[in-house]
Length: 92
Image 1: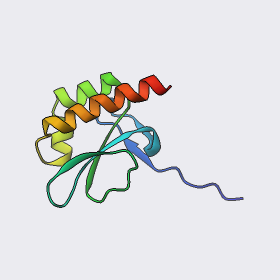
Image 2: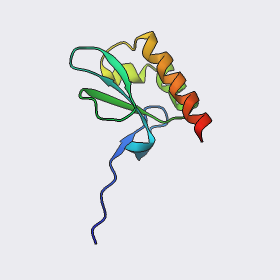
Image 3: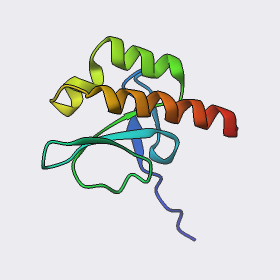
Image 4: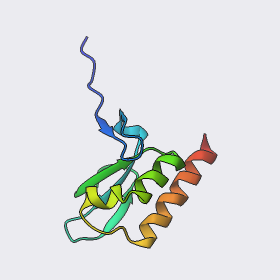
């Protein structure tokens, strides 16, 4: 029996390769808008971060998300990321 390959992505905070499903995706859509993509299916340029506040803080402080997405991160997206991480921590 053949095993399915698990898609891997690198967290911008800790720089570790992890399963795509375990990371939070931020996407810059073709129209230039940005959003948090919980399903990982929205078309556009994506960047990934662990659902760990320390990783998010490192990615934001170093402007790593903005560099990866080639655009400044709007304040509403920053807030949705922070809220999403708080929600994930409470559900585990």
